[in-house]
Length: 612
Image: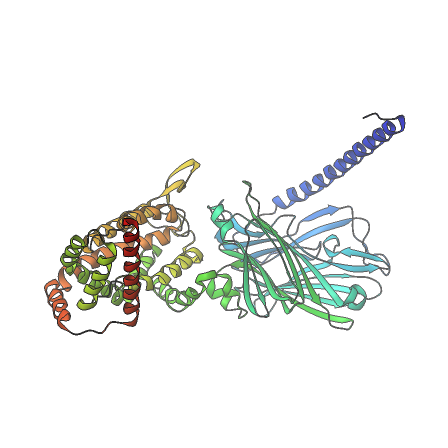
């Protein structure tokens, strides 16, 4: 391609413009990074205290962008100073900033993060609460960029503490943020008192921008990302959304509250009158950083008509504790995953049976490992009628094994005829071939309930038992630096015990049932326990410990019931007596035999045609 002189000059000028743009943009970024680093360095000097002293912590950070409102305007110009002050109780410590008049650091005193420091719910420059206001004629500003006055900590007669910030101008327009932290509460009350609301906001709407970042608090960050969700309360009730690679949702009907829920902690913003609109965008990084998820949420509050308007919000920074969340009486307890998705019905098993029994045992037993063992025994006693029915059915099948072997030898070449005769034998003997399966199927909901319970129970977090350092996570006794297919980068000892005991149960059960012609059914009892290794290896050690105890109880019950409770001679005599009784075929069996007979005729016709 041939370029003329004008084209060459154009390309050169365009290149100069690009290089100039990138150079000046980079210089601006460097200056911004210097300011952010200076702020973070100042915050790093703020002491992390474990005492419950109520003395405020004050840190001054100069800023050259804001302060001193002009006449009739909320825009601030000149020199500004950031001051940090603290509200705290026995549970939570919240550091507030007059810049934006909002929380800047939030620590949970009773919980430790993966690095042994206190769990910090708010800390980064990403975390903020902000909204746009009209600061003057054709001028707007975000409150996160404005400095509020006030900030005095007040102790109230009921034991709560409060702090208030005010932003106003000479015309009487003002915004007041009042935060109140009650005694023994994770919930913070946030009142936004507006004067001149009709002039501060356009179209009677406060558009709240809530940015929050969930950072790693658990040893297994993959599991933590998997358990992280967005939860919210709509008009139709509670709903949740898993993250996956990210999430982008709009709620035109509005929400009562919205929450970023990690495995064991959540941050929730609640509006007393509800939000008329909500839009959330979440990102889940796939790199090795300690960021679990970042959420940007736009929430709209409709402001009543008038000048002086109070808006009431609440913010929850705390654990996913079912009892604590339920006390707020706004369905926040649904954030605790006691059963979701296609097995959501098991949450009622957890709420009405498992959780109350677990809490009862914790009142008398210190070790949570022993509590889980007692819970296992209780559940096995509860399901013992089903277990006995299953073993009794197995004993009946064992008693019929000689006759089944005779039928197998007689109809060796005709599998269809063998099936029909075997069904006839079961019917005349009064044996249900599915009798051992049905009780086992009824126990599946219990397994899913316990899977959810042990995955979400914060009481197990950090609790040690034998070699397990944390019952809420896997007990890695052997680790390596690379990922292996099927099992990952570690071996869990409780998982090994669960696999071995499951294999023993399968071997014992195979000895009690007739031989299977189907190779899949024949070898499945051996394959299934091995599959558990890949399934259970990254699950909480509380669950694999429960499964191990349950398997040991099963082995003991099998031995005792088969050898000391079930009378095999009596069962055999009963089966012979049943054969003498006249029996009518059930409708389903008649249809099954008709289908088998029809298929037999079709197969015979095919053979005859092949011979011709």
